[in-house]
Amino acid sequence: MIRPRAIVWDWDNTLVDGWPAIQAGLNAALSDAGLPEWTLEEVRARVRHSLRDSFPALFGDRWEHARDIFYAAVRATHLSVLRPMEGAEALIRQAAELAPLAVLSNKSGPLLRAEAASLGWSRLFRALVGAGDGVADKPDPRPMRLACAACGIPAGEAVWYVGDNALDMEAARRAGCVPVLLGDAAHDGGPAASAPAHHFLTAAQMTIALSALANTRPAG
Image 1 (cartoon, helix red, strand yellow):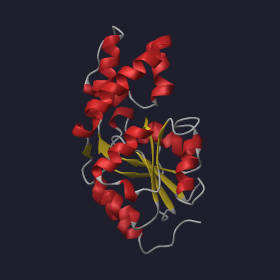
Image 2 (spheres, rainbow, N blue to C red):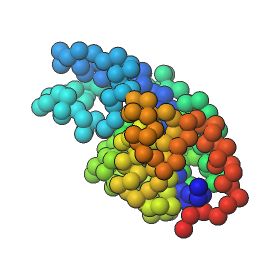
Image 3 (cartoon, helix red, strand yellow):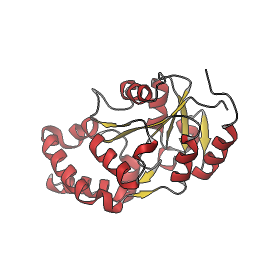
């Protein structure tokens, strides 16, 4: 394992648990469209792509109307239900001693930045790149390049992208970065199906690994 020169992070289910707000938004939009609501487990298992990439398939030509309903419900609840994942704060503070950090998420950019500010984490990251901040959303490589540029490092093998699912690992590979899985990827068929370069089951395990890299030379 080689010390990275920058670390980019996914947000939901990697660093934070904000699923109740996402469920509230989706169910408000689904109910308005006369569609069955999703359980929290269904939301966790099915939400991967950004809204602009997923809502047209769900809601057809009324997807923009559904988008407005979704965001209204999410904005009403997301900061009150947001919780850090276990060990996440200690992990990113350890990581910040190792390399510059950024976030790349398929959550809307303004929501993402509001959540980071609410947790007091904004200053830990050089950039918080969300859905809609660029011309495309992950797994397209272009938003990853934005996040890496903010760290002063080009996207490539010196950068880790840490996420919790197979889409995150695809996003890392498409940008030429190192795919790092955090968690058990239970909704994506387990770690083997995601094919990460590195896998940490818990934030505590990854914190220890990063600490061990602190006295080594970075990649590149």
